[in-house]
Image (cartoon, rainbow over all chains, first blue to last red; front, side, top):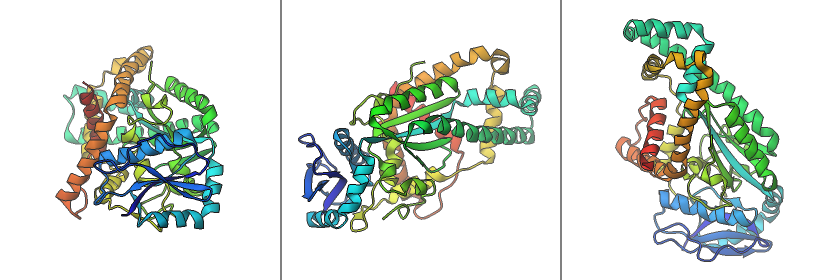
Length: 256
Length: 145
């Protein structure tokens, strides 16, 4: 029976809640493997495990429960060892490394922030800052929407202006929140958000970070911020993970 | 404006943010080379999808249309009015966030699998991403209602 691994904690870590449900259907019970001063949070690995919603959620929930009680090094989803002994021997072989990481992340949690534009609000901003766009919009409107080429030309200018604004607002979000974080990890670029950035924050001072989030919201009503946390420090498990995360192109990146 | 996503308040547990943390769960976290990872065929598609940045004719036309529909007088001439508008939109957006996020993730994953099946190894057809984004948020709102 292969072993599904959720994360690594110190053996001094408080006990997990009883009957914590792991991946699989039916959910496999979560259990603990001890190896010296380290423990692995594991369950049996179900046959044919796939990244289904239910299993992703189980992975995240187990780590959230473990992380609520103390620091945990979260595994990426889907890590399966051939058996329990492989897990404990990995912990034993690399004990110094994992203990160092646990010490470095002690008392810290990850907050992931994704920002998007309120489209209408940002169009207003772009238009008020750019007389050409405003004039062209009015001309097109008077012409009943404008010709295909007119619309294309307007759209191209608007998209360029919105993109520029995205860059500026990404910097606004980052520079406002960075002073409240001990580390920052930039996520991949996408059109799904104008910035996707994780902050490593002291659990104790998380309220200061969240207050600043509210300030950013209040000062920038055209920016919508989605904040997720406190999370286990997914983006900070490796010392150099923060450097790599921005360019990580696949499973090969930021590995050991 | 009261925009406090539910997941901020929880000590640890909570499923509300799965959609937004999907990329962390799948793409960050510790990887140990002595372990194998389960096959993530559908997820590879998801990851490509997430990284595609497209400025297409469709996008241009959509933005031109959005400008055309925009109430110009509500903008720079009436800037004090703007926060009202945005506040309203943001509030409904946050309701979507706290409740609809899970089903959003389900859709994303099942979409990813569907694409993997439908398209096999073929390159994913690009499309107007802002439109896709919009449909995601409206879908979340629908879930909410």
